[in-house]
Length: 384
Image (cartoon, rainbow, N blue to C red):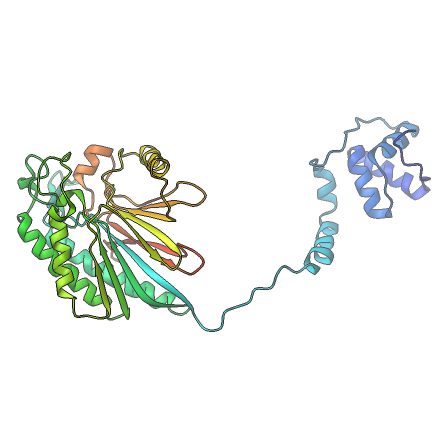
């Protein structure tokens, strides 16, 4: 009798045991049900002993902490529900203290891989003809789409958040150049000098448009590999020699007397910027080797280990497709998209067409990323 409950069995308990046994419950399930109905503390061994005494056949199953008896649960759903309502709901969690007024947050736009001057053409499978998916006119339409999307999102979120400061992390490749690879002159509609001047004008226009909805603008310009002055990708030329550095300095000159616009032009390819207590590592991404997601993640983790980098979020472009990669429990990488629809170069390299998208996210005192949007630069026409 060792380990068996010595509490006497009543006639009602014995009758109920027989009924539960007939329903197919195990000794463990019967013990649970009897305890629930009669308020006793019967063990499955007590049930097993009684069952054998009554000459009832069965295959007793040893109870464990993780065992879930399906027939037992099915027969007692209402009892479980009552237990939850009468017990768990009484133990209130720490009450949420709602802030008075709107919560202050900052907005961050990742802008990269615009490739001004580029002309992208692909073969249309339906017609068999070559179609243009990207050129100067398309790029300018996409800038208007981006502007409108940010205004719409800010208007939507302004019901809950006080969004008074927009940070534009420009991650490079605003221009496509004319000397990066052999034959590039056949895939552009203007030379690099014209690309620089045109983008200085268009980015200044965009910043000025954002001033209409954000009291404060901070623009940070990181150079990309398409801004280099030489065809040699292994040439470690200074940032000041990059065409995009000159582009950013032009924008800096445009807004030099505007107290509401801050233009930051780093002289390094990696730049750390802090919003609240969150650190953002900004880079174009061409120094990160690989093109598949696994190879990019591996390269980023190798960089993180080798440099013992202290940042919360690494923001980069270059790969023409949006992604979010968890590097560690403290570090996250955000890969921005491009402006080119169905980039033919990206397809040749990664066998995947690009989708024109840019990342837009929020920052609070507590979190480095609160909300985030992947803004499509080509809006589908809605049928009326």
